[in-house]
Amino acid sequence: MRKNIVAGNWKMNTTVPEGVELAKAVNDAVASAQGLKCDVIVGVPFTHLCAVKQVIDINKVGLAAENCADHTSGAYTGEVSAPMVASTGANYVILGHSERRGYYNETNEMLKTKVDLALEAGLKVIFCCGESLEEREEGKVEDVIRAEISESLFHLTPEQWKNIVIAYEPIWAIGTGKTATSAQAQEVHAFIRSLIAQKFDNNVADNTTILYGGSCKPSNAAELFAKPDIDGGLIGGASLKAQDFMGIVTAF
Ligand code: PEP
Image (cartoon, rainbow, N blue to C red; front, side, top):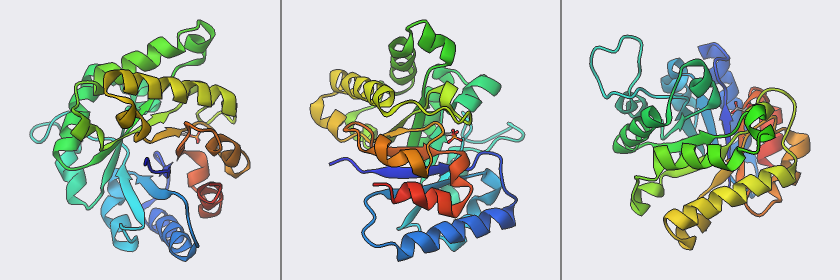
């Protein structure tokens, strides 16, 4: 059966000492929590990976980078490759976040390469997709999601697919305080699962974890996570305070 996951995406926040403190607090809270019904991951800036790895129990709290390069090594000043991320002890990478697509012009084609390199390096991928408000209003939600997922992921084998987690993040809900209603989110999650079933089969689709992201907080997480196709959350703002993040983790 598929896993429930709550993953934090710290984005470009916290200094290394602040990040270490936050990671310690999350790790301690997870270690002392009884009967958690989800896996917990922290997604941190590249600069924090090694230091955070030292203060978490990786068997209890997964560690994600927020991006990786579309090359393995070489003359790409300022870039960080998937093997470099893996060498820190991180086990996940977040790819295709709408901020990367929007501000850094990441295309579906480029993300396909990043996905391949991440999997080759032994990382699991949290792959983000989602529509803008304009696209939603124009009735293009399914077209956008289908293109993002099929163009970057549908070349993978069922074996490789076991290392893919999908995060549906409507762009209009990210950092805006505007959460998709649980019904809106469920509708898209069910669509994503049907796409996966069409490409592979029902078994692969049923075993795929699909997270919701976009202004998820302790007060709305339980309602979202109660939906049959919502298997947890990718959490931005609310992952920056251990108490809020744990409020979402314990919403299952
Ligand atoms: C995100 O950026 O992945 C996200 C979901 O952000 P927020 O929770 O702040 O909307």
